[in-house]
Image 1 (spheres, rainbow, N blue to C red):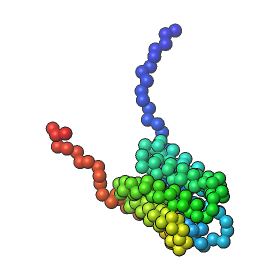
Image 2 (cartoon, rainbow, N blue to C red):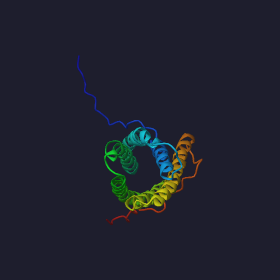
Image 3 (cartoon, one colour):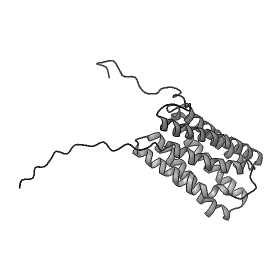
Length: 211
């Protein structure tokens, strides 16, 4: 019997569901819980902490990994980074913060938030290429991080409280963007408005014969 080797042809991997609504929901809920604490609305302890590790951390990190599968460099970078942010923040509170006094912890949190504000600044700029809703998430998050790192560096309770209020707004914007992604994806049409990119940085095609 003669075996004939068949020519292998590349196959397109099957499409996967959009992980962005999940990542946004995970980010929104954990941000809401921590911001409610910063705004001094809660009478409990640290309800946000477990969700920082499990939902805002692990689930959002998974959403980032799935965005790599979708070849979405913006989504994979954003979700993976903020998944890592929540995991890192949760571990810091559990393993490090208990060893320091209040001023030292506030200083640490100030540096952590400053570092992520720097990252968020260029992601805010690039979010202008996604849509208005995503830009709104990064804009409110930028303001939240700036107010919170100022509040922590100065150990000013009022400033941190204001950062908590803005963080709640950030969570609501992220929840809306998540909800829009879910229903628009289900229906295959725009049911909830997300808007267009603010402007287009894509280079125009040069005329024929020109580089």
